[in-house]
Length: 141
Image (cartoon, rainbow, N blue to C red; front, side, top):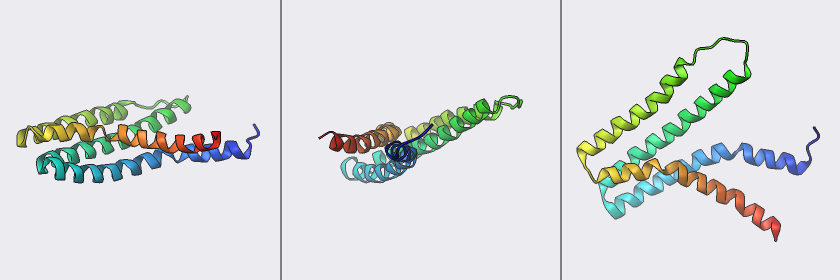
């Protein structure tokens, strides 16, 4: 298959999407926690930080699980246990439950921040979509 320069540039652009999403999550987490502190107080900000940390770790864990599943799928012929993948998958939800309980026991208001922080990957993916859409719109005009 012969790729043109445009195809290679597009491939390079999309290959960096995962790292840009992760960076966006960090930046949005810092900005969001500051905004939550200023507008809603330290309890909501603490909840937001907890939710943002869970969301970031969940995103990282999901990336590793998908990579492991893809590797396992491509390596047919080798018998491998999926137990570790299942354990990692379940640990993510256990972590969310523990942090949610801790925040709820400190402050019921902090749960709002926790839920907002859990939506951090959605905001980062929207930022990436806008980042990818902007050059496409410029080329169309």
